[in-house]
Length: 383
Ligand SMILES: CC(C)(COP(=O)(O)OP(=O)(O)OC[C@H]1O[C@@H](n2cnc3c(N)ncnc32)[C@H](O)[C@@H]1OP(=O)(O)O)[C@@H](O)C(=O)NCCC(=O)NCCS
Image (cartoon, rainbow, N blue to C red):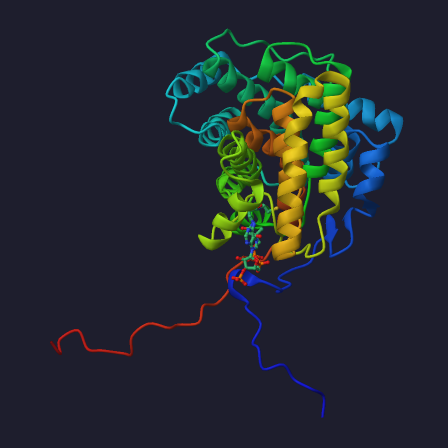
């Protein structure tokens, strides 16, 4: 008889469950593949626009297709002043998180999309490009308000990554800044049935429209166990830096205390990658390159990150995920921490829309069952 394990697998959170098919992406312990192309290959040789075409249209673009696709994005970046004024007003309240503002922004944009209620493949292909194009404009208006400066208009001569940085900072980015942002957007673009994509697919499966599914996906990405981890990872590093700077406490001691308090260390661990997230190494390399070329003083964050990573591996055997180097990289680039997760949206919108279109193309409502664990049957009139 084969040996059986007495330990029942913990399937809470659908761990280990395959719940559907996709041709958009494949994730396993060793590889992340977008429609047949491995992530390291894409990060080394493609641009974000090419990856967006691969995900949204379904294949690697020819030069002509890429030109048309890029033109469509560039021509769709404008968002009307009425919406941007509302974004700025909400952003002037400092307690409102930019992810909540972006969620509202997408909702407002939906009301002006002439094809909002049209779930045909043709309309959804057009809507996905409009969503991709407009998200940086919404993020830019939010940050301009936070910085008490006038918002700038999207620049059609810039790539998606460079335009995003321009709108967030109000300054034209250096070549290396645009390149590092482009790489991070490629790495963030898609990840099969992660929580936000799954949320988007559940909403789409009711025959709801693409904008509604994207609003739900933004809500799911906001949490710090998912996309919000890139902000939380940087907040944690700043906390460690503060607590250890006068040598009152070592990094080792800080981590031991966190373990004793059973705290989750942000930017570590992954549902699928148990031996490391290959995106993390790629982004760390580019983040360090940015520091070397632009501001070597910021390398201290990567040195601290390496110490934290070493203790985490030694004591817990848990590896960093992509959000860990992302925090340090965006921090070195001078991007305000609360915009890290909205930037994730500016990339993952491609994966979300690809999945929403895939769901609509072969739909059956997603409606699983629950195991009832409540009280036994009672009569309302008995007591
Ligand atoms: C990503 C994450 C949500 C995955 O959750 P999960 O699949 O349910 O986690 P696992 O089943 O792999 O966890 C196994 C063990 O490692 C621990 N663990 C996992 N990630 C940890 C972390 N970041 N810090 C401390 N302990 C962690 C768990 O608490 C669990 O311990 P236990 O067996 O004593 O209960 C989880 O690792 C996490 O919360 N990470 C921090 C947030 C983050 O970086 N999210 C971005 C993901 S890309």
